[in-house]
Length: 423
Image (cartoon, rainbow, N blue to C red):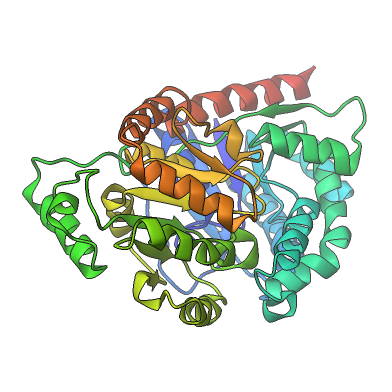
């Protein structure tokens, strides 16, 4: 089967969608299928995978508007690709590609059935931005992307609605996302949608290997770099008095970093040796550093703008706890990557996070509540069962949330879409 994947993110854009598509494509090839990725041009080199072809198309570098320009060019690329190598199924990753209903229909009628992946909605993103702004995470006008979402999400949502009305099958990445699409778009009785939660790379995101000397040295380097390297920490002992707290994700308002910083004074009262390491790119770095200074916690905060995939994986292994205070997600992969790494996670007690994380594998706190966040973190750091929860979390990932699971599930959906079209 020749699978054409249309994704606005693909490495070196290592966002959630980009990471998912990269790994999924490789697993499709392992299952014996041909894969062509149609994505946006990038100045950096695209990583190669055996059996995966990548076509890069032009796009307008404007917030939100890029989805339409990229969509038009991806549409043309699909027509050209199909002439040279007939396509069996089109896998479109919404909302980063915007097609009109007539464009979906043309592709369905003239090339191949479309399976659209729903990674959350623009209207849901808008609500997340509004929640974050109300919680004083960041002024909306400071970030062009947030401002564009707030002012144009309703306009661009028509392209999402086109996708759910005209695709052969849709696949939502969580029950929460499926509920959103039913709520916002009120699809008709022909709406055919399954739920498949994305997995993570359990071979990259894995527990520490204490027999690997090079890895142990890297662990020690990281802990000492952030001044949280007491003897217990260097041997991965939960008895450490210098716990390393890790938060990963784009530095944008809806990720909840201001809430996290506001929780730190109370965390430091009970765990004065704690260090918070934030890994992510975005416009909020200077604002977060200013907030840390105002709170008097600058010596306990580190922000890393860029890490390699291998360095990030080691950070997950080296951390004592991962914190994920997001105001909105379609699914949210960071908690899974944490659990796969054998590190417990504290996150918000809201869907879709609660579809993956409960108190048997992690901790939950009220969204936007720094006091409850601090209470949750302090309890987890003092609880001897936290490390056992992390082991159960790894088992949960292996049982339910891997790319091997995803690839098999998606191939079944693709085959159903092809059969559905031939009826």
